[in-house]
Image 1 (cartoon, rainbow, N blue to C red):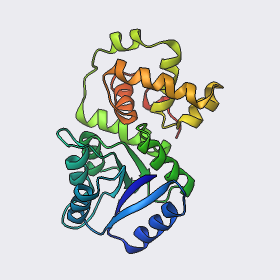
Image 2: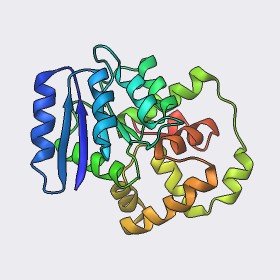
Image 3: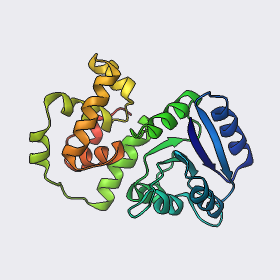
Length: 224
């Protein structure tokens, strides 16, 4: 059973997400918060498998909550899924720095939300295909991040791992990557399990940042 904490200051959003998740046999919403401080308290009390947080909330925004429950020093670290609008702002960049496991648009398809929760609970993280190109590429540009061990990183990846990194950086799910490469999903997961440590990153989001930072993928390579 995947234990989920939800936090959003909009009652209708909380109710809708709770109904969606609780309808699944393998998901249980164990806590619901209306503001950031309540979310932080519930996270400490319940230690959920996934915390699904809105960005803008009263008392404490979702990024500050995420930084405390999934950032460096968090013990135990609770994977965080951030719900956001399409707008790019500094909240989103702070979320990347806080180490969140993924982003989704609030109006995402219900199946996409369920898939994201399950992927994050399994330790895979998730990327919204629409958001990835804008968020990660602009994050790298704003921060003027320099390439890090690019030559070594690319050299130690197999051809298949490079293919997967390129598709991952475009925001594709494991299922979409498997379809594009005509392989099984477990094969993609196996490659990812080896790819992330090679790059020295912990999540798909960090791998996507690495790919943009080192020009493995560029803005023009990704779908609009």
